[in-house]
Amino acid sequence: MDDIRKKLELLDMSRLPRHVAIIMDGNGRWARQRLMERSDGHVEGVNSVNRITRITSDLGIRYLTLYAFSTENWNRPRPEVDTLMHLIGETILKETPDLLANNVKINLLGEIERLPEEVRKNLEYGRRETEHCTGLELQICLSYSSRWELTRAARELAVKAAAGEISPDEIDETLFAGSLATASMPDPDLLIRTGGEQRVSNFLLWQIAYSELYFTPILWPDFDEAAFIDALVDFQQRERRFGKTSDQVNSII
Image (cartoon, rainbow, N blue to C red; front, side, top):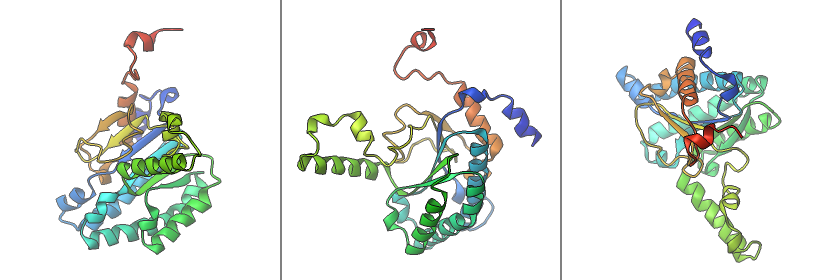
């Protein structure tokens, strides 16, 4: 705890990101390094989810989006997929009371209809029970891919245009963004990927156009509060220009 307190002193609490997105990578490798089953890594990864959700909420960050299961993950071995599905459903059921106590709202992003019925019921329970919460909004991306999301948005706008509800000339960035699953929230300020890989893996491709990217070799089960604060400190050392020059960003108007 002393280490965390010292790291917190490095943070400028007035310059925290509004929205942090995380690609949680490394559960399988964490387990393999310990001669354990991959499922053991996923179980340990849940503890990291709890830790990071708690500190994100405590810091007052408004949005946290977690890449829990991608569309491509359906191609993994069936036993691992089944274990993951069971774990996701049981975790939501177990953690909902704590999320309620901490005023955390659950949102679900992805092809939720592809998930097993029991998992969907548990997820819907968590979403329904927390929908009135006004603190941290926790987006859980399940059976999600950015290409699926972009295709769905394009199809939705095409249907509206064909029906005469909108003109093709009306379709701009704002209208398109409003058709995405993340329409109700700001784009991520910071994208963190654990596990040492340096790619975005079909995650929030539209939304991270100007996000700061932070890659760490720490495997997700080992990613704790101190590691999260390190990412926030690094974020605060970046100059976010959004296409402008440094002089423009730093000028006093």
